[in-house]
Image 1 (cartoon, rainbow, N blue to C red):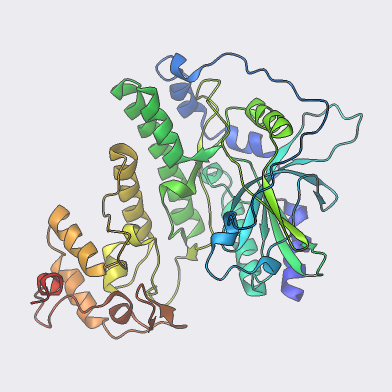
Image 2 (cartoon, one colour; image 1 turned 90 degrees about the vertical axis):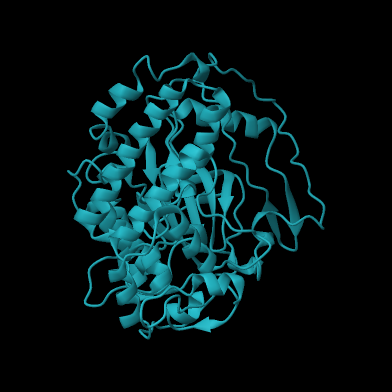
Length: 437
């Protein structure tokens, strides 16, 4: 654990805040863009609902108890091991600083909680909210070190670049010990409201004039491009998992979180008792937008799959969600920053059209053959130079082996995606593969 101790001990010193509080760090980046968003063109009354008011009951209500046979959140993950998750509860204080308020989300390797920084009773400072990611105890030490190093690198490469504040990197990190004496990495983030996919649905429901919603989306896309430029040109990092679910939108202001927690006080999270732990059902609906959009800024998040772009050899191992995979990933010709830009293009389509560009039936395993055929049908033949590179790199191998969509161990793109997709003279075999000729 020496390397992990080294990183976590250094983490609070930098706090990844680039020498100023997070809100101040972000504000200088968007002054010009916020002038556009905050203008009368975008501060539509469709987003205003007046002042939110609610009251908190004096007697704490009892949370709903879920039936034992109902799978809750992380319990639905194949191979779920409860002992790997930190047994967090509302009211718990981590690192003597952060009190947990509500569970916001979960994944195969962590849970995410809304929390606030504990203050003295006579403090006049406003309450500071954060999002707490508690990683599983089976998170390998080298993976912990990699995620910490990546967050430090992304937050500090060049804080003067206009895209540096677009990245939702951790602002602090530490470890906690569970009652089982297992070690859990904890990362602290700025709390964010919702994904860009959810935000897009919100715009759709409001029936805004097309020029208003399209204008706002253009502003958001420009901000995201600034963030990608910072990642690629300053950090030399490839995200590899860029999608609408990993672009989050910030809160209008903290009053939205205040209202959310008031609701939690009267309607606390449901959960169920399993052995010596309680599994809570996450809740992350922060309700309508009560104010204009001036303070709501997109943030690129989730750098767990990010890769350094510099190196002696090209990256060839499989990346990206199935429907987002770039041609060079499917063909095994080596991928780089362009893979993120492919994702960005697919993401724009989904945001505007509200449907997937390359969708496949969920009832069948993912098919790279179908995906490539759909690409060709949409944008034309694959360039001959890329076909030639595929032929020359056909037998390059990666390590360790990866499990392909059909469950088989694979060590190169040909095995993983079911190629080859072209003959030695460059002719496509996709049609025969699809029609089984």
